[in-house]
Length: 320
Picture (cartoon, rainbow, N blue to C red):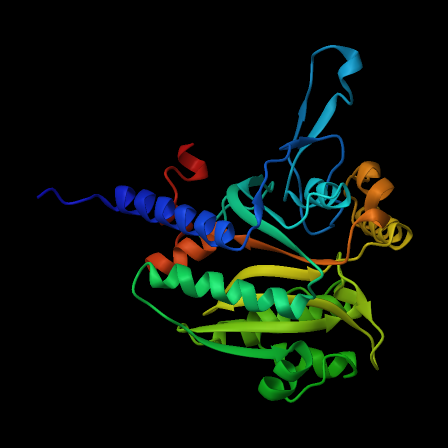
């Protein structure tokens, strides 16, 4: 019997995962859809850079400059506003500059939306999907669910919502980093990536919910004391796999957030990104829902037991 090469094993594992994902959503009556990869609008997030390309056809076809999607989020929300209902997309996305041992500029993303759900209920479904994926390789994970605030209090003895900036900086005193221009949220992110995330048990799924309101992205803000963003992240071991929200559907507030993103871009000397006016024009019609994006390669890396993204790709960026 012939021995399969590591590349063939990786390809077969990916094929098995894709089959599982589609069966998972067929069973739950969630519709698979396909949306454009090229758009006239881009992602304003100051921490994400997009690829662009030019269209050279007929002038009536639309905007000449096109942005390769960094996620399918905006067109999926337009479908929700049009009444499509629960839906998902499994496809390629692109992020410029993100290349290395754990990142590839082109990768696969699974994104889905559930009508009438909040972020906590959707997080439970993400756990179900990840457990089903682990079962492909004969594994199962323990699950820990906690709020962002509880995580910081438990592991660092700090309240991330109220602690003074100096208290947030103290646990990072030994880290090699440039503090110039770092905001409070930057320090919180560094505490997660440098002090909390590396300590997550490899055999455990960790779900963190209810983030600081300043880290809302496209999530609703709940008026607790202090307010929190209805958002969650899911980790398998030390790897962040998924980021989900109880989705904002207020166009004026979403426009303000896009404009704040572009203001940050200007301050950093980055190019502003065209706002998705088509999304904003229908956002108020989008039903109450929760949505999540999951990095497929990250999940495959966990299933394959590797820390190198190249091990789960047919050809990494350098060889494409």
